[in-house]
Length: 496
Image (cartoon, rainbow, N blue to C red; front, side):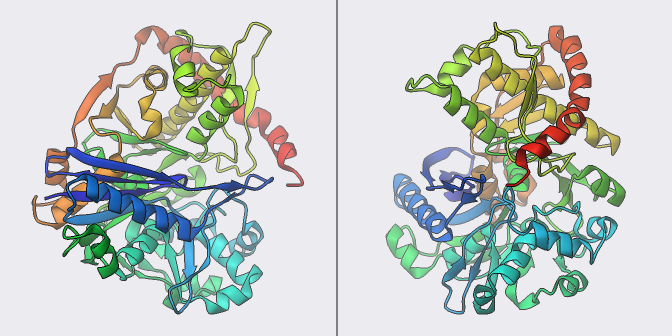
């Protein structure tokens, strides 16, 4: 059997087809045209996301001999599309990094508490989740809201476009800030407090649920290979990445894309006071009563992309240029690695990039290494915070675009002083979808058996012990950096 995994990201979509052993038989990438407003807001179009997803699916299937047996999607979280009664998109996605709905969030915060949200939703109070954007739509665009029939989170939206059925996985639903993560259902009490209507939202289901067959028109585009293609419910990208990384005991997946996230599997839900205090969400994993947690920097790959664009000399392969010229030794330059707010543990929407320690002799390659060090120190901070809760990260499996940089992986291993592995397959999200599909189709007994047979480690980078003491000292300074530059960051975004 052949399984197509769709990894629907914030900058583009990947469609990758795998066989029963996890071998990639085809892969297609389609980027979106993203408009960036002067205030940094990124504007996405739901119609374009679907069109690029459809194109990638059709081409990947064609490259795999014109047939696939299942299709399953993961997606970025929080964002949603609103559909009218005819199924037309009437509100495009608002990304979690953008500041729409901050005023509505302040009003909503008065109706609840950090403890209540942590207890019910497994989340810290934050304007980044779906709630603030939904309230913005209701309050600022009432004519659109009145016409809204369905509010679909991104993975839910892709499911609907694939097969005409609406169902949202537990993990994606949990990013809304009104979903009960223990009972795995929409929380009526919170929805009442916020003035939301239950009818707008899809039925929650576990990831790996068989949802239906591919729509007739899509099946026709695939030709004979489109007949009876089953649609399997995927999920929020981070837990699906963990499945693609093999869901190995003692390992945590480190997704290195536009944002960067470490996703340990915790079993039980984290303590409510830890979630509220440290900002690290506890999210449903495979099914009811199973959890993972997310420690993240929301502008990690975006920072690298910005840096390379700003400091490139116009050569054809700027990333290769920087990676091949990176200095071999640690730098004394300190970088706070945020472009549009921090993720965990600060959850500071006003945090911005800060650099200290530059002198006349510093080159752009020194600065590039310092940026990577800052990103890795930020992840060490998150690993340290997780250890307070008894969640220990002893080995990382790096996936996503950033994992292609061996320099970055080497710095990460040195700063965290733990091994960092990469998979034989780069696209862990798409592979996670294929693993879910293989289990749903009955090829394997369950997701664990499918992961064991389909996810394979290619290489492991060991930490250099000679750098341990230096990075230990640098990390202690990094712990204090955010407080030192907090006021300056707030000043930088005042008036925006």
